[in-house]
Structure formats: C-alpha cells, structure tokens
Image 1 (cartoon, rainbow, N blue to C red):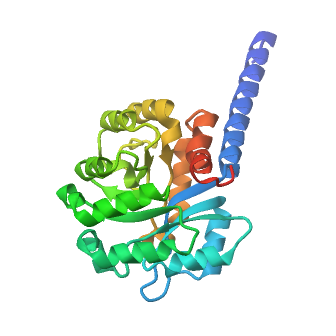
Image 2 (tube, one colour):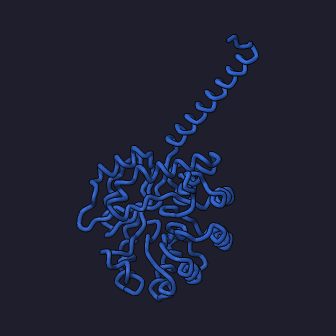
Image 3 (tube, one colour):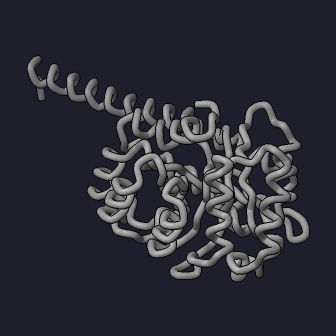
Length: 287
C-alpha cells in the first residue's frame, strides 16, 4: 500500500507533536526535581535517642532537595543539635516545643512549668516561634495558653498550632496580633472555610499541609476546590513532613514525591511560593 505524501506529512507532524509533548513532560519533571523545598513541619524527636543520626537526616534532606526546615523536637535537644550542625546547605528555623516528654501533649496548656520552659528556651536567642503544640476546643482558653500567645506576640514569634477551628479562634481572641501557622490546615476543614479564615486573618494565618486531606483525588489530580484555593492563596501555604514517628522518616521520600506531583499541576509561580517562597518571606530562608 502506498501512503500519500499528505498522510506521511500528517503522521510526521503527529510524531513531532507527541515527541514535543513528551519532552515537555520530561522538562516539567526535571523542573520539579530542581525545585527547592522548605519542610515547615519537621520533628527530630529523641526519647531517649533519635531514630536517624544527624548524618542520615542530612542525606534525607539532600536527596529530596530540602534546603530549609522548621525544626521542633521533643525534647528541644533535637532542635539544638540541628542548629549546632550548621550545615551550609540547610537553613534551620527553630521553634520552641512546649513538651519535655510525650505526656506533656495532654497537659502543657495548664502547666506553669511549661511556660517556664518556654521562657528558658527562648533565652538561647535563636528561636523564631513556639510549637508545634496541640490544643483543642475550650482548652485553648486557659491562662497559660494566653500567656504563651502574649509571650509570642511580644517577641515577634510565630505560633505553630495543631488545633481545631474553635481553638484557633480562641488563640486569635487571646491576642489579635498573633501569627499562626495552622498545622495540617485543619486536617479536613472545608476549603471554603479555610478561605474565610484566611480572609479574616490577613498576614496572620498560614496553612501547613502535612496530612491534609482532599488536595488530590484518587487519580492524583488536584481537586477543583484546592486548585481554586491555591490560585487565590498560594502565598498562605507551606509544605511539611511531620516526622512525629519513625514511619514518617521511612516515608519521607514518598511524602515529597507526592507533593511534587501536585505542585507540577500548578502554575510555576504558585508552586514555587508553596514549595519555598512563603517560608523565605516569613523566615528569611533562602529561595
């Protein structure tokens, strides 16, 4: 069978188009791999010893192109060690964690000794915030939580709050000048409600996305609600690993591979803000 010149030209054009599309996809993948990441929810917990050595942690960051971290640890010794490492390729932004041991999660908000711990840790001179701390509902209304919020505001510190919406609003009522990074962005709070909270607290509320449900569907594609939310508020989100248990260190590569998969579906400027630009703006970490 003879193929006409017109059909041959059409097939050639199709092959060229497919090749161009494949090349574009490959370039998008390479661009995502080059995109630097700031991990805004990193724990180097020690009870009594960390799961990974410092050098193992450094390698995890290196292979995932993580160039900055928001570091909190239980106890704070883990954060001290990350600060003392002074790795030139990594910016460490330390937060004071109000826990000595795991049981403090349930009691810190009514414990004056924890407030003394916060004050003592702050004297190290390098902390940029307090948290991650856990607080729910009306427990946030305690005297010691208010003291903690006021302490943060007076010293220009951020709060990293793992909380429900009721507690979040109480934190802002304690002091409207508070600046809060909302761990997990409420886990399952409806995107429309997240938008309302962002609008109600401009320059004061940011959402961290570890464990956040609903961002993608079962096909790995961004949902319409989250695509719209990122389009309007790409300057209000941060990425995080939340290495609260050993399994999260095992899963670290997968966590950031999944982040990169949906970041690649966003316009480049939105993706860059969420990946590292917002952290650079908040903390002075390198872009």
